[in-house]
Length: 266
Image (cartoon, rainbow, N blue to C red; front, side):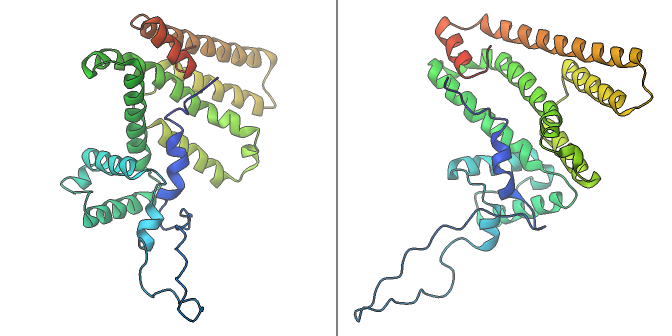
């Protein structure tokens, strides 16, 4: 089945390119064209000096199209008080944005994640509106319901990351690495309030893990922890089903089929 990569994952692919000055890698520089041969058959040495973007620009490139990158910078300057009045379309403006990001990275913050997620969500919704053939005014009426479903799916995805990573050896990492993973998950969850169903799902999972790590936990405590996890999972599914039902109620059969195909509806 054809799927659209969820917008929530796209920032993860772009993150390395937005790293600060602490050793993170940058995308490879574009290959330079071969030097033209001289009349005597010998290659002419390449000219000295700059032949492409400077190191700082390469280091902060996102790997996105110029249009997406411009939208990212614009979103960041619009929502960041420290960047108020900065014109990110100018070289000086971009330099100010990069300096701001570097400063935030040194304190463990990644404001670009939230901005990137909003840019990618807007692109995703624009694509959905186009295939629906809806005017913007009509799509605006269903967009909150679409966003509600996406938010539930995204938050559960991020909360599930530790469970997924456990099978990849995260539990064997040193404490610093574990804190890094947990901090990154908090960044992914962003400033939006975590849905109560997701919060209980997360808390129940942590409580079960605590019981499993307690050699003195008795059978009753273990049973209670398991029951809480199952209840939380059921509550999450009920919340998601309700949100999907509300969204389906305003869609045509074809629109519903498209969102099922894209993984937004079950």
